[in-house]
Image (cartoon, rainbow, N blue to C red):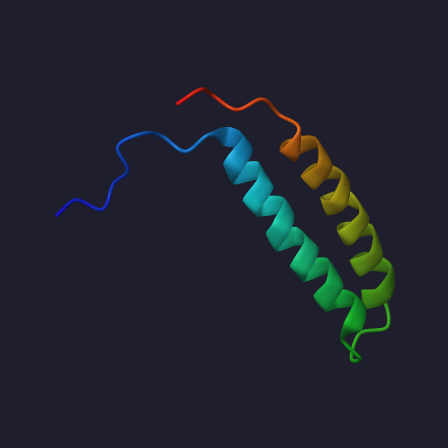
Length: 64
């Protein structure tokens, strides 16, 4: 049984996943209590990933 996909994953899907992971990491940095700079870093990571998510969600997809 092969675990490879028959068609390649689009770059937009990969970028969208990276943006979602970045969102969760940014929010995690903002709510953790141990690092004082976490709020600042988390805010900018979250803001950048929100913009990336908006851009990636508007990329045209390939027709099936």
